[in-house]
Length: 424
Ligand code: SF4
Image (cartoon, rainbow, N blue to C red):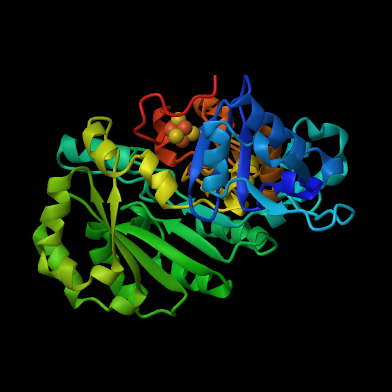
C-alpha cells in the first residue's frame, strides 16, 4: 500500500484547549462547542505532547492504524483531534497552536522592588473606582441590619457602621484629579444614608459635574426616594442603580413608577431564595419595568440549597456555554471580576475590589502607588483559581473567575460538583 495512505497528518485544531494534569491525565476542550473529554490514554497523551513540540509546528505524521484506543477514536470523532490526508510529504502543513500572550504577564510585578521602571504609568491599569462616601446607620430591626451587613459585602451598597467618618468634597476632588490620568471612564459612588446630612448635595453634584466621568450612584430604594429630586435635575452623567430587598415596602417600590426612568441604569432585586424571586415578579411595577430589573442572588451563609440549584455551575453549564480561548488565557493571568478596580471607604482606606487587605490611605498615598502596591501584593486583582483549592481541577481556567462570594466567605468553589474534576 502507498505509504501516504497508511499515514495522515494529525493536528489539534487551534480552537481546542489542552490542559495537562498529573500522571498522564489531560483535558481536551473545544472552545467553540464546549465539547470536552478528560483522558488517561497514554497513546493519546503522547500524541498531544508530540503535537505541542515546537519543531513539529502543530502537526505530526501519524499512522492511521494506531488510532485504535477508545479515547483516541472518541477524540477524533469529537473533532478534538483532526487528521488530513498526506498529498505531498515534502509540504508539511503548519498549524498555529494557541499560545499565551505574555505581554500582560503581571507576575513581573511580584517582588518588583528591583525594577523601578515598573512603577511608571501603572494608573493605566486602573479601570474602575468605587467611592463609599459614608457608612449607613439607624436600621430599626436587627434582622434588616444583619441582612444589609452581609449584602454590602456583595453589592455596591454602603457598609454599616456607627462611625461618623465620611469623605469630604475636597478629598473627592483630590481623588478625581488623580483618576483623570487613568483608564477610568465610570466611577461608582456609594453614599451612605447620612452623607447628605453632612455634605451639601448641590455642592456635591457641582463638584462631580466638573469632571468628565460617568457616575453610577448606588442607593437602597429608601435612600433613593429621598435623594432623587435634586439629582434628577442634573445632567445625564448621573445614572442610578437602585437596590430593592425583602425589607423594602411595597409602597416604596410602587413609588418608583412616578420617577423619571431615564436616569435609572438598573434596579437590582436582591433575592436569597426562589420565593422572593416569585414575590418580586408579582409586583406590577417590577414586572412592567423588567428590562431595567436585574435579580441578584445574595449569599446569606444559610441558602446553600438555593445557590446549588440556581447559581453554582454544573458540568452541563460548562459544556453548554463554551469558554473562549481568550477567556481561558485571561483566567490564567488575572481575575476579570476584580482587576483594575479600587474601592475607597469612608475612613479613606483603599482596597483592591474583592480584596481584604488595606493598600493605603487615599489622602496621603498617591493613586499610582496604590495601584502599584496591588500589582505587587496581589490582594485580589490576580486572584486566579490556581491560587485556590480549584487548582487541582481541570476546569481551573474554564470556570468563571473567583467571585466576591468566594473571597468574602472563604469558600473557593463556584460549582455544585462534589469532586469536580480533579487531576490528582
Ligand atoms: S472545583 Fe473549582 S475549577 Fe473545578 S469546576 Fe468547581 S469551581 Fe470550577
